[in-house]
Amino acid sequence: MSEHDEIFTADASASDPAAASAAASDQATSAPAATYPAASTSNPADPAFQPHYGKRKKEIQHVDPDDEGAWVTPPALAEKISESDARSAALAHSGWHAIRTREEQAESLAHAIAQGRDAFGFELKTELPNGMDNNGKQGLGQGGRRHGRTGVIHTPHGDIHTPAFVPVATQATMKGVLPEQIRGLGAQCMLSNAFHLNERPGPELIDKAGGLAAFENWDGPTFTDSGGFQVLSLGAGFKKTLAMDVTGLKNDDVIAEGKTRHAFVDEDGVTFHSPLSGKKERFSAEISMQIQHQLGADIMFAFDELTTLMNTRRYQEASVERTFRWAKRCVAEHHKLTQERSDKPYQALFGVVQGANYEDLRRRAASQIASLDFDGFGLGGAFEKRIMGEICAWICDELPENKPRHVLGIAAVDDIFAAVENGGDTFDCVAPARVGRNGAIYTHDGRYNVLRARFTDDFRPLEVGCDCYTCQHYSRAYVHHVLKCKEMTGSTLATIHNERFFVRLLDEIRDSIDGGWFYELRDETLARFYRNGSKG
Image (cartoon, rainbow, N blue to C red):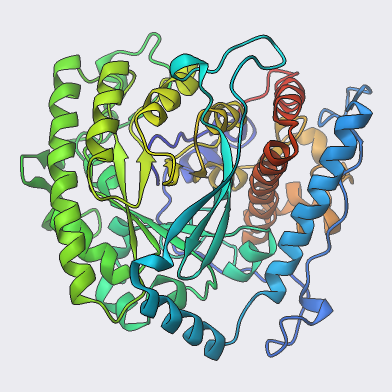
């Protein structure tokens, strides 16, 4: 799980109490579910191997079947969104044709190795204009600056067009969804977790397999996070580790009842007990770098210290300085390992900016991390939701424009718009898949729980007009049924839809920035999504 991911289980638990407890663990091994038509494995271009995509309709019925009203998108914006969706669907569709042979992959990687560090880079395309938006509001950066932009991240395994959503395959898999299916959603890249992969199957095995992408059969860029969130969250059995609203929270709310402390932070790193074996283990800047280099992802994150909004100002200050010292050690170890593994494709290292919701700490941390030899940056730690945009702007004011910025663990629709407008390039979160397994479905008209009784005989798709494989082939009634039966098929179908929702949302945002209609898309999308008080 990435930093400050929240577990939304209220909708699911309302109709299925067992679903809430099921959401508490993201550790189970994924069981592949073949939801796509049978196809020749030797011919990925076979039409039977292709997901079917359509265009989103300009008028979409509300997700509440008792509401007879329909949200009508202004015609000019509807036409732009339709064109954006067509491009998004084309990208998703072309992803199947882009699967290369082993020989082509080997040739591409050999070229990347020859290029070395030049194989990674960021190309800036379009920047949001400064000044007032449609609502007369100035940008949140210094001097009214807006940091939102589109661009391309070049990696040895391919390009990432930004802004982009990064699906999370925690243990080199997304529960119930094959990598080929994730590619079919239009996803450009995936993120896995160094802590979990270190626990099993181990970085040595993945290195032996040819790296993370080869191991999981993913022909595209990959990320690994440092494992810092997972290790440090063992420290107190966190219940609301990175809650984004501290109103009414007490210290007791942060600690899960009956949990004991399993991790201890010192200047060198973190000592913890393995959740699998119970044995005492150690994580440090150097160990995290060694693990991630063996995993072989295109983009790695430096080891940082997790703090929460409940930590004191004094502790936050100390943590920012400790994270900076760890970051310098990560850079040094990264340089050493890059030289030792010169026969491998270059792996980029991103430094992580902490500082909670304090402007001076965020700016200081960003300046410190920017002073080091990082290839990009991660915006991490606890974000207070009400000032999400401000925090991103504070950080991006201090970062260079020629390097990419990844926002860790963000998937609320309003948070994504705030983060993009203020400088975020890529985003990851486990929430779309996790809540989908518990029946929560994202649509442009809000989020609803398909497990509720009223969907038992609702034969519409999960979202009318959606181009995902699930919506093109299955009804709410069917997804309701298989989730109620706790069949893996239900988790697969719900996850495919939710992941496609976020991939497509970021595709639309990217097109809107390039096309000059970002603010119209933002205002229309947020008004529509939260019209009925939806979560997410």
